[in-house]
Amino acid sequence: MTLMKIELKQVSKSYQQKEAVKHFSLSIAPNDCIGLIGPNGAGKTSLIKMIVGVLEPTSGTILIDGEVIEKRKDTIGYLPQTPQFFSWMTAEETLSFMGQLSHMTPAELVREIPLVLEKVGLKGEEKTKIENFSGGMKQRLGIAQAILHHPKFLVMDEPVSALDPIGRREVLDILTEIKKETAIIFSTHILSDANEICERFCFMKQGEKILDQTVDEMLENEASDQLVITYKGAIDLFLKELKKEQAVKNIVVRGHQLMLTVENLEQNKIPILQQLIACQVDLLSYSIQREDLEEIFFKKVGVSLANNGAF
View (tube, rainbow, N blue to C red):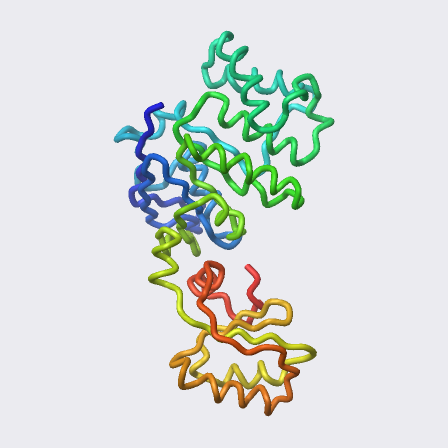
């Protein structure tokens, strides 16, 4: 299968007075697996829908091998955030219907449907009606319809966010196999999911691209050392004092752990420790470690103490 190049050039999308996507450019090469990462409302879904041709950009262009998207839709597989199926259809009937929409021949459908059902872990469910499918099974069927016609480019919008841990694990394992033969863009607000299958990340904030690097580049160029404080009990007084410290640039709270990005860390680590002691924090550990991908994301999108690291 010949792979292709996808290019987004200064793509924007406006809804009345709101600009959901702003001058977004991105190049997706053959074999790329890109995580499109951003908080809810960042514009990911609008961008995804423009890439697959469901929405028309207000401005800018999207090209596949130099041709406008409208001429190459048959080369794209699309998994929407919540796949919609006719509940009275069986899995086999659903894929046959979807395959016909992709201009597959009857012979191709007979050959490919059993193969794709086996690939996504639904072998033996050919005659089962969709109304009897679990959420994880519906998501796997959604992947099956997206890859049935052997697309050169697979686009997925939040494919695992609504699943339980078992369903998420199953779908991520399937996508790990699919990416070996198909270029993928994977939209999510859960960085750990994308980190399992993507080698490159594109961060979005308020409709704009704010970072586009491989994992290795990101860890090399964007990560800095941070203070990690693990504690028991209350720390309200200490947090109040931290807000006054100009050297503390970012605070993320996760359970009973604080991650602090600190200017001149070597110079300021002792005063912060002294403040901990003065505030009588029940300290369990106090260490310096390199930021991981989640900390980089929090820093780039402006997550701070105000929302305790949630996004």
